[in-house]
Amino acid sequence: NVYPLTLLLGIKESLFYENPKTLDTIKRGLVYACRIQHSNGSFDQAFPYEQSFGATAFLLHSLLGSYQKLGSELSLQEKKGITDCLERASSFLCRETEKHGFISNHIAGASLALLEAGRYFDRTEFKVCSDRLLDRVIKNQSEEGWFMEYAGADPGYQTLCLQYLAEINGLKPSTVLEKSLHRALEFIQWFVFKLYGRI
Image 1: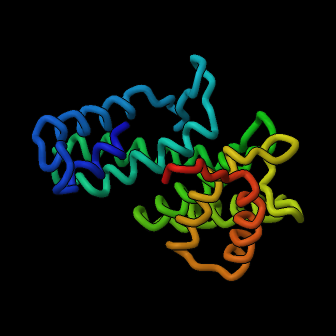
Image 2: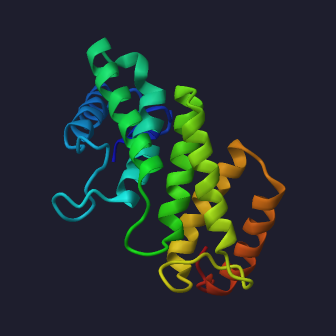
């Protein structure tokens, strides 16, 4: 929840714009998230001690995004705790893999988070892990354009996977990734419906 609040904090039209209470809420959220992290760098998704690859990937992306925007508002102690937390999460994603099956949106999310972490912390190993995960997602894309979610297509999760891959392509443009994204959009178009009379 801290990432959307962080974005709203900087939008003049938002009720949360430069709101001190919102800023305090975000800071507390960052600190709390790091407090519930496991010592191996992982986070739980639904169950205690689950140590989820996907949840860790998604949280790393959002927490790092908030921290980069609000780092100057934090104390030195808070900064140290949060950066340690983010590096632990990054290391976990490099060491581990998704154990529930081949879930492209989780792997793409981890690839984006590691690319961002690699750039922020200037850690080559995070960037290498990001490339490896991205390669797995693209290599497992079907000829029809869908990304593997367990054993087949999932139009809903395809949109999330597309978001992460598009963000990667924005940070690190690639002809191979662009072609993959075009194929994915060709597939997903058949699952977008217009409600007549509505925008």
